[in-house]
Length: 355
Image 1 (cartoon, rainbow, N blue to C red):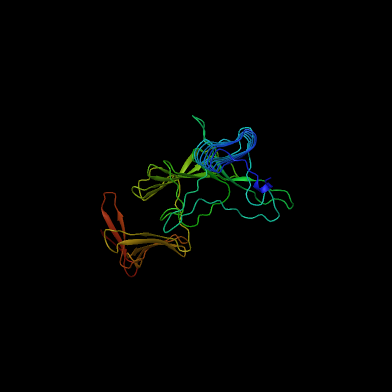
Image 2: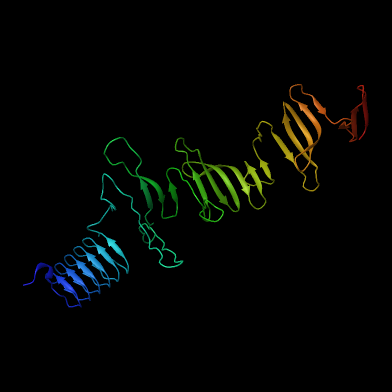
């Protein structure tokens, strides 16, 4: 008589075992357990009523589970692996909707879980990619979306908080993010965030007010910022940057100069606002136009930013216009086109001469 730990029922395969009426273990080192279980693959294991594990190294666990391809695994009643190296949980009849790792569905002290791709072994061996994929559609039907969910904090208590979508990737490649995004490091040399497509676009939607969003997108070599509706249509283009010539336009989609403003004003605001005009064809021939204590001044400037001479001053309080440089005058043109210079000598004498 054999003891319990010596009980055996050899199959036809080398060092194989079978347990159950009409079970078969025909593969070398195979195991079949259950009525009608069949394990024909080498190193295969079939567990459950009518389960089948015919692939090399395959595993079928559950009534009617089938793993007929090499290195395939099927878990659950009716689960069927359809390709080599495939792992399947559940079936059309007995399907799974939630999977938990760690300490079960809930626990007083849950632990973090990391899912890994295979790492390299040896010197300078790269690790494997880890790919997550949503379900595939057929024909004209789209595939499923890929979603990442988290549960924000709720009211004090012991009830589980509700999961909400945080990142959704549609089958068309549209990525929707709910919440803020922090980018640390670089996804590509010189870039912390890269958006790449035939028509790359960022869409900002303000959920507190209707139709107050913005698009930031590329359009045939031009970067555009446009107002948008909540439905996704452009209402007006606020800004355009043309990369071919460096032109920037406000209120126009086709700027014709470095700064092109249409239908609006240009405002410069600071403690000492100024505009610096520099002529790149000749050294030290630029100008400053700036505010100074309620006086608008025009001065000649060097390329280094120094003032060489005050030329004109306009006092906004008194309304006076002053030609600042001594011995300079004001040039006016007569109806026949002749230019005259008006100058003031010492003592207030006015001199007029052809300019």
